[in-house]
Image (cartoon, rainbow, N blue to C red):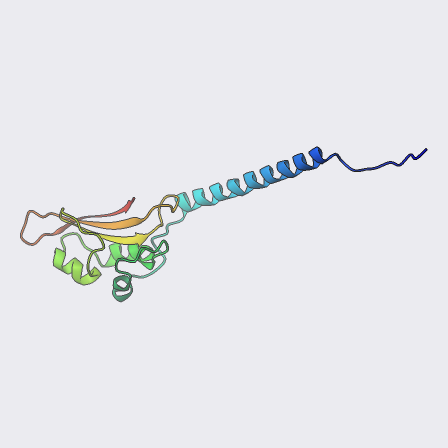
Length: 145
């Protein structure tokens, strides 16, 4: 009589254990990403870590980069360079040609993927009154598309 004892688990238990481990690992990864994205969304300002530099800004004309350096310059640009009441000609001299044509009195510049969940491009949209000959800047807004 051959009484051999084996300590192996049946294959179905091994497969189930691998599946459970994978599921818990995936859930943990997703949970960490959600917390990190929430922190970035509520506590981290992606638009404030670089001083505005006109030549660097203009060098990224029409560049569709998710990490465009333009996005990191926006707070300094708005605080120290753009002023409500500037003419459209003054803004074009400062920032260069627009990245998107608009039939409205607006200039739009690509600035990367910074707001929200970083899935869509953001633009810096500059609105002008359009009613006067001087076409003055009346609104500055970052738009997530």
